Image (cartoon, rainbow, N blue to C red; front, top):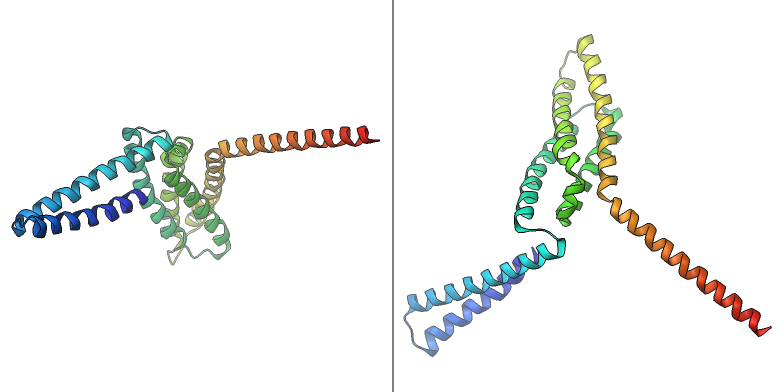
Length: 214
């Protein structure tokens, strides 16, 4: 988004400047000046967009093909998350509202993390290709059946079973989130160990100097 805005903010002044110079400084016809200005603006926009895309892909360690694949799956996931949210909050079961809120929260967290850092997609494949689909299907069926005015004993038992399965899926999706942030946790532990080691060395050095002064 930032790369796009940068390209636009640079291309627009370039287009205007080229048009003014061509029209008034060189006395070119209106349509000719407009064509040249548009070409210059599009050229600048294309160059800056390509450069921004290259920097983005390099930063995240992805090829253009990989990013296109991830972006397509994220677009599909966005629609599934909308369906999940709609289904979960159309249920009349007040007792499970906390569970439903948590399920949507965790699922959206995985999506946002992956959108901001696309390479995390590979740590969240179980979520995107299995757990999210299952959650959407179960939530939609549960919402439809739970909103029926009359419920048979069989339907009530099915709803209980579906609710339990949704709870199990929530646990699985929470595990997916842990997998997505696993590298961050490992890095945090490493930084903690480094900091503790530095503190320990500083304490030992201070103790040694204090003993030397005595």
